[in-house]
Length: 172
Image (cartoon, rainbow, N blue to C red; front, top):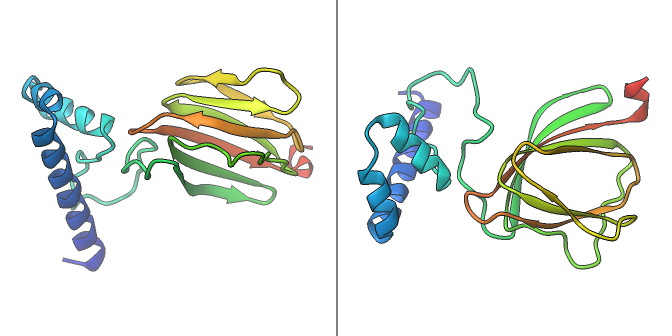
């Protein structure tokens, strides 16, 4: 077995063990697991709790699932670069009970389009009186230098974002 396959196998075992431990500690989860009638329901239930147990460890990694992977620690975000080119980048962000530090505002030189694939979030713009509530499937465009901050994201399994950043020269 190649090292990459071994690491895949060990990660799947780790996630399976953690999901089993959680189901043994949580009677509601154990009951929900017992109610599953097939493999796909178990995989979906595990994913709701931040575990990716559906992919076979020996399969090639030719595709990826934007909603898979463990939830980051509370208050944290994991960011993955998915693709990039001259003047643009596509990023996946997985947030868990995350918020911008007090008094911090993003003021970025590039445009940003975001969509929320999982969970919910609250964003505040410096030029708006109220924060915006975003839910699964919501998207918005943030113009360059429009000051904004993250007020809150969901607890585990967290909020998953897709963010496309680009510079004006790329848009013309």
